[in-house]
Length: 432
Image (cartoon, rainbow, N blue to C red; front, top):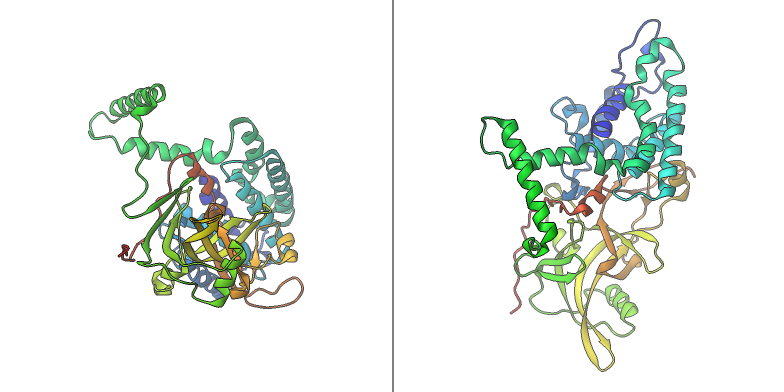
């Protein structure tokens, strides 16, 4: 957390805002990378703040306007979401090209190292990108000038060690700052006496170890948490449908929906029940357009954009229209099927994706033309899909959407469920 959310964040912002200390004969007027100043900085800060309605509640604190709030207790999670989630797309065309490329290379490597599970190919990719990034960073910023030696902070060299250390001790997100601080906070919660804090801390840790040992030897002493709220429907494998729900079954709302269902089932679409929300195995909560569209945009945190795997194992990004519980004919009988009606985004612009080293997924929404039905078990995560208007490498300027995934989401699979900021204003509708 300190590496990405404090050290590297401070380095990049000091450079781009032109606040890095300079020594003679260095001249700030020669710093062509210092572009986040005056009106450009204010416009970028406003663009960051404008992304708030599109960031799901599971992204924790949405980044505030950095031009106004960066020096007012700006949180590490805000820095991480802003710089390593939003900035590759928002700074495209603003940051000079060579500096933007260098930043994207670092961002892609950092996203890999923020995963809970990293395979050997990804580890090698991150190592190569970090190594190339450091060499390029020294060449374009530091430029081997003695009066810029302070540009090379310890965190610059630390990046080269992340992938190597991960091969020895595991993913950094599970072996370093995040895990330690979570453990400290968890243990501190059990402290009750201000007197002799270290003695109390020792006893709490001892009690935790003894309790864990008993649970390991006798698993029935550790019953599973009750994760399904009242009137919800646990459909297995960690997926839970949450209220509100239709009181009565209904038909498809449009010919396009009916056609998508008929294509999925192989026969005419039957009646079905709609559900408002779906909780995923990673703890995130996705909403369907049915209820989310009722909320004012300025007071909402959109959670209906999802990442899903298709039957051919490719990953696509989709906008969930409804989570449905419908009847499917199989043989002489009907049975229920849990599906989502989704509208697919287009494939990302290939040139921009390659140019940004895979950090900027810029897509177009296909509306009813992209309607498709998927099984709920194919949904992997809730993502942010944010509108922007880039000038693509082809020279075309058009309205598009870029995708942001929550950095470090995989850590939730260690057994600690994410606390979703989901203010459920929907009334439960029980079946009549």
